[in-house]
Length: 153
Image (cartoon, rainbow, N blue to C red):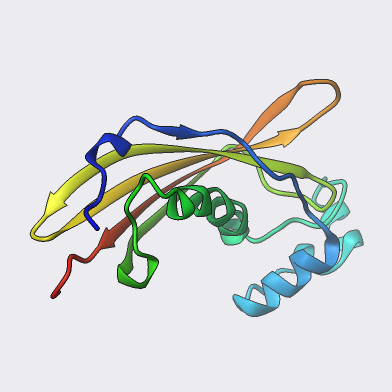
């Protein structure tokens, strides 16, 4: 199947809410070998002026990948996940992620470029913390590039 070039400019709305828990932060910190006490100890985080545990900067990938899944699973996209190679990932943090945050991500397809028999797709996830009412506070912007290999590659 060929990648749909009309994906460029498409957006996928925020879907499922991700509730950031203390133990999830601790597990992620252990997995990525982040050793700062503010990832594990509430008192250490509070000593730095935070209300709760602080997630390592790359924790945002969990929420971004949930948004990316909407694109991968979209039958109109033409993406065979078995042919995907992750090429690049970047984070722009607007504020740290804390235990207790309720996060959502909107996905935007910023680029689709044919490459041989495949395509390079660039996406942007805008991650927000939900507040009272309809308020949404920007938390992180992630930019990702994936290469979808063509048949025979």
